[in-house]
Length: 405
Image (cartoon, rainbow, N blue to C red; front, side, top):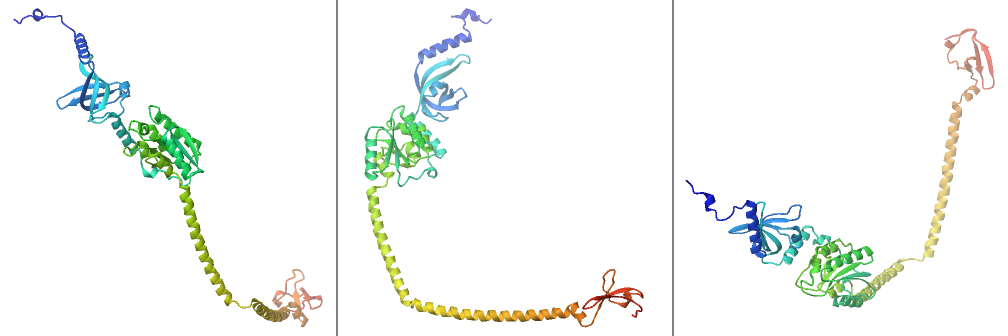
């Protein structure tokens, strides 16, 4: 006989639900906040926005979930194969009895989350072609109005204004003051760029600030700032005051300057240098024109020496005209006489062929009185037929008495 299970039972029998509930309470009390390092696998993000994955190392794995509110605070995009460190609480999903980690925070292992997010955004914008040289606009050579997006006070705006006034005193400066660091900086910079584009008076725009740490410059790495620069129809020069770090604004802008001062010099032509250049060009032009005038003067002198007295040429031409006029008159008279003679001979030939001329030589024309047809043969008439005879002068009606073929 097998021993009774009930007899050996030291405690009450628990249901599965009760057991899982106790396990959950124990896990949550014992592991209310833990940091765990591992590799992401089987990552999926359904329409709810929650992130489900498994965290593993070479010897084990555990399920993990990050709800949408926590996932929204992660600056980068988690993906399979990424080594991460997570913070969360361990609990039990009672319905299935699955142990899993509910993740509150995540950072990449070995690199900062912000840096990873920046790298991912850089790859995304590069894939869209926003860094391509083919989409960059040329800077105007002589801008009349320069738009500036930077802080109202500070070294950056002072350096820009000083340089512009020195190099191009007549240029108009259109300032759109913004906050250049902090949570609101990116939104303000993007809005200022759109405002200058809609205003339409700026020929070129400088956007930037003075130097600082990478954290101070972070607004110029925001996606909305990069897209605002790329969408701007006016050429944009990035003037973030740093040398070693390259921001997304630098990559998207039509031109990059290391400092605000360099940006102001880039968008203008030095007026003093331009004046000196114009003076050199004017001197060279004067020398060239003097040489051209000298050559033309020598050529004119050579031609004038070959010319004869124009009055003699005029007299010669008058004589030539008189001679040609006389020859033309004689030719016209000869042509007229020839035409008259030819007309006279033609008239005589026509007269000789005229029927009236034949009648005047004693001939007559016989016609049928009824039809008026000319009788050309004796066979066409019979005895007693009446005929009409047409003479050179007058006509007569006769009767046929006899015919002979």
